Image (cartoon, rainbow, N blue to C red; front, side, top):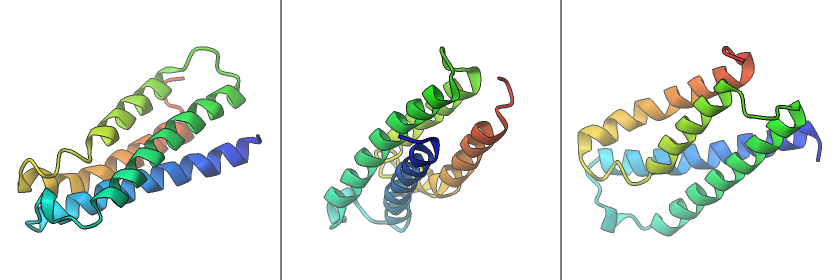
Length: 122
């Protein structure tokens, strides 16, 4: 598969994760409960497929770059990926955390994008 195909699938995976986690965060921030969410299965599926797609294609992109052992910027992106993995369970713990996630998720995505584009500590 080409580098651009991996990149497209990687971005699609990230968009699925952000859409699902953002939807749950907004639902919880507006006072919704886990039991009230009619789209719970759809959002969980989007989140899971997006996580798998983004990590598999991310490592595919690293292989296309010829990186043997993942560089430090890739490890930082993996830590952000782990946070995104937990992002679906966090919003319902309290409303303040849900509101913080609405802001934190796009910022973390921007940091991950910065790491991928500029590879600051390669």
